[in-house]
Length: 248
Image (cartoon, rainbow, N blue to C red; front, top):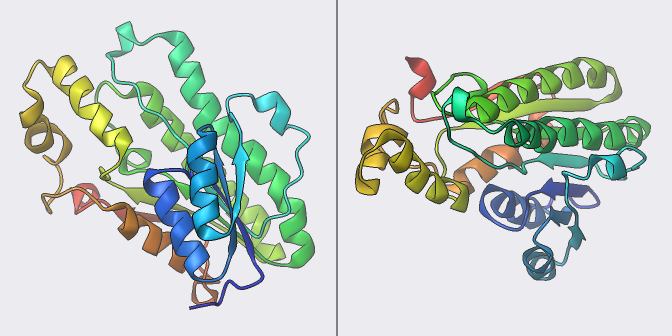
């Protein structure tokens, strides 16, 4: 498939996990992909593999993004982190950090990309949200708050972008097999006071009807479809890929 030939894409957090899978899927369809990541080495490695570009950037440095202008046709807001603690123990600076990375940075990147998209009459903004953008879990106050905010940003972007040929959607996976989830296993074991080997069955997959992790390539396939001409009327939506979690 080469229906993205001539299109440019930017994927944040693109050096690994979901972001890397999305970058590969978009490149396979002909897009020129820029890998944006704080991991400079990883971004350059993948960019070379995909004949794309690397952008070494710390998205927490939001002031540098305020005057940014992005000439991209596809924006995948994927970069994120996790922190697990009860509210009363949650460090305020970590709460602010997560909102900055996962809400303010996507807003600023969207803001920077829309003029180019409007001028071309085409744009696809895909926000990697989570089932936690629709549901809550204990001990994840910052992450759940940020993902709910990202859902709102995506919907407003859809309403404003629609008349200009720009769509905006969220993809809402459950737990995906990524380094971010691997790190959570130890954190969840500590917070819940259970062995690490029990975290997957007792915590991560307890709400899912399908008892396995989502694969990054599955998320990337949905992201890829949302950029296709066939998805031109899909906007302001939140696509769950959570094994049935949100059906409860």
